[in-house]
Length: 350
Image 1 (cartoon, rainbow, N blue to C red):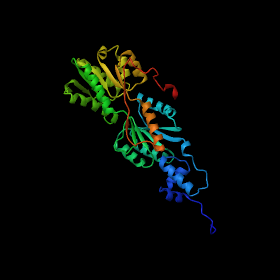
Image 2 (cartoon, rainbow, N blue to C red):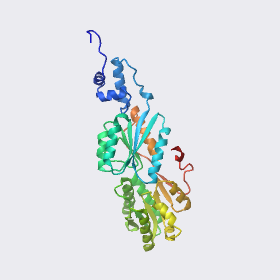
Image 3 (cartoon, rainbow, N blue to C red):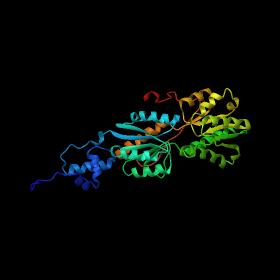
Image 4 (cartoon, helix red, strand yellow):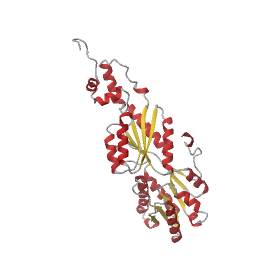
């Protein structure tokens, strides 16, 4: 370089002036994302101050690239959540592109590898996964690089930036209050114990049982640690009903094919019709069962609202206008009389 000729500012010069790392400057200058609005503005201001002679990215016009990672599960709720991923970006005001990845449950190495692969070119992560220590430790590594939002089940001790979902324990307590009302003139409530490795289901069951315990009515509660195979579980329920005619209400924290099997068996096994039934989450089958009277109450966690709020949070984070906190959403209670007229709300949006 000839004497007296000014050297062009380099990324390291911008980084020093802005007080950030070179990798952050590279992300901002090449519009790779993953940097907060406040830091992005500081980098761009430093670049202009130092006289960078190139077209600088326009922060406000860039489309955010968000990754939704869903732990695959054979449930109607998972199917609704998957469909909601396609609609949620259309319901926010800013340009957003959502990429969806499905990872098998119980494969933390797959989650870690995928996050390693995408972190440099995503602006945020929305994660549906179990609250287990392995997942929490993985997330801790990545929250320093970009914002992470958990949905449906919070992953405690992970450092995630926000949780968008219902209070599962309170949902279970609400089911217990309804069940206790069914049993007020006598009788007992039956709870189908869920897989306690699934945090959302475990919290619902705990909330349900705690209500009866704290009300001094634990003798009205019957626990069934049911078989994992729905067909066998149905036979266990029928046998229990025949042995204990005082059962008045059944509560299940899991929405799986058991409800369909119970509806199909009701004609041959009238004892099934003697139970009031409280389950979780709307599905095509549960809507049908509400209308036919095979299910009485559904507590719904509104996966579409969870996705919309998660996307909104990440948009706000990049605009510097979001406080980093959990955001519990309200669950809805449905009977045959108030099924949403537009259900399924996103069936045609795939």
